[in-house]
Length: 282
Length: 269
Image (cartoon, rainbow over all chains, first blue to last red; front, side, top):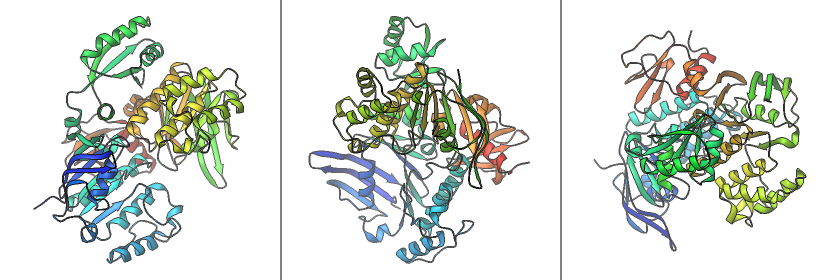
């Protein structure tokens, strides 16, 4: 059986600008794929090509084994970041409208307050209503943009429960996100930068052997100012300072601290997914 | 001198937006306020920004001209250029000799080459960095940031945190609302709000250590009411601290926040 999404050697140019450059992307049934990358990395252009809303300049995209078209798009459930609900309609009315569009039976609102205006609900419930609307036609592929942004940790876990249930039922899920806590929920990550795929696999695969420099000083303030002043892009974590780089960069960092008269212990530690993503994006 | 609020209660009509919340913002510390929508984060920050919200409880704030505030939306004037935004803030605060500081702030924010660009033509991340830089122009003693990194891509987000930490290194007390728990995990102090109530307060480690019972990593949940997904696996909370088949798991701040929310909802004895 072919993958739900199968994009191979896809390129998209806008004039002289290459937004997506020789990219491959597969989403299999039952799999949650996380698509990561900074703004301008090409994620949105790639998704538009997967959905058939934009034609590749070169390469091939297949949805459910066919070129993407209306029939294939019918099998997709899409939840955009702004949720795509009518906020001045009730949950029930939104569900009825969407069922009409897809020509499917309307599902009940379940434990959602069906009679209430979407705009009056807390964001967590709005997000669940958006899922309910997008899932009515039993889509085989879910495309989600930051699906749990802005809600409480418990609401987020409930939304992931819903997403996982869809994957367990056999749907493929493509999640585009800037949010690391969301990225680590995926089975497989695809990291884009400058239009290309620069890393794939699990969180451990993406981070690989990448290290970060860690500075510990009695007075973190002085150490931070020194490292920042030298343009080394420090990140504060509690009272320790994390600096992009590895073993080879230790002498430079020690010199910067010494020049500033800052006493500090310096070592390396495994990079986080976010640090890796930022370095891959540079 | 610390800033903050003690036993702060704010009502909007019949609704209690904040219910007896106590926060302390210390100079040189980045203080994160976490929680979902409706938690009360923005209300708390509006009080701390000195916006004259009606409240009960006591509030200690620096003089208004020493408070920098970035609201959850905006913080810049879209129809003004970057330079005009800076000049506008300088005039509003009646600053003197601010030009050098403005140049430094814009350079640090990577905005030096966009000084003549209209703010609305900047990217979302650049606009948030400009808003942060504007808030820092008057050298605030207290910097209040409402979800300044929400929707911002990881590269710009790191740059924003570098700017924010730089202010803290100079002795500014920073209080920042965020829904990103990886950011909160890097803060010096965290307050967890939920439905206007303060569910936890401490360093990230203290909040993780402070949850009752244990959390285990499991292939399948033992009790759905106290379990949540983590990728294909589950995290299971054991309120009474029993060991489990999956073995103990070192909880994250997110796990701790979920446990606190379950406790607040009365989902466990």
